[in-house]
Length: 90
Image 1: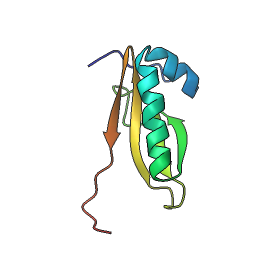
Image 2: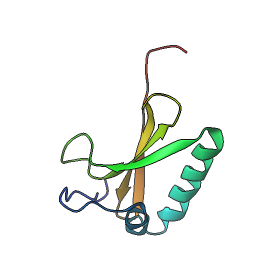
Image 3: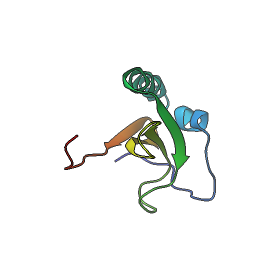
Image 4: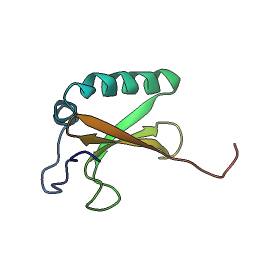
C-alpha cells in the first residue's frame, strides 16, 4: 500500500488530493469524468473508516437518497478506489 493522506486535522481540497497522486491525478480525473458520464454524482471529501484509510473523495449518486457508489483514496503517486457492493437487487 502507498502512503495515504492520514493527517485527520488537515482537510485537503480535491485539487490537493490530485496533486498528491502525482501523474496518477490524470487517471483519477478521467475516472471521475467517466463516473459522471454514467450518472450524475456529487463528490464529497471525507475521512472515513478510521485512521488507516485517510482522506477520500466520496462519489454519491445525487438522486439516490445519499447512497454512495465508491470512495477514492489519495495516495502518494497513486489512488485506490473502494466500490460499494450490496446484496440488494434493484
